[in-house]
Length: 186
Image (cartoon, rainbow, N blue to C red; front, side, top):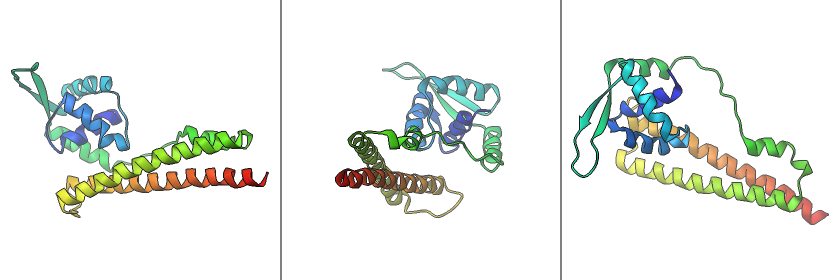
């Protein structure tokens, strides 16, 4: 099964969703750490259904076309449970900004400053969004620390996202400052 399949099972383990709702959930909260295109979701749901890992119920609607609401099956829950703790390789990081930084010594200083200040701002903005999500979760869930709660899993993934965005924005700021300091000494 694909990682997207497990991501969908992870969402459906929390509650039933339509395909459209799953696509929205793949933007946030899952989009914080895993990306999938809308066009990938429906074929993956069909595969999960064929494997007996999800079911769907057709819900009739008056103003809109009927929709399928998907639920995870016991077999799907078991597959997800096994996958969550299965051994895995350390993922390969592909980060174009870091790759560019490797050759940054060739850059025009002002262009480098602009590039890194722009990325610093983007990561600061993402950090603020994550912190707002964390605050909302704390208010709604009461900071549940029960490890068998979906809220706990949401909290721990947000904690990593917050740390990542904070570190990345600080790194971008530091790189820009290096060029700013060098530019004043030239």
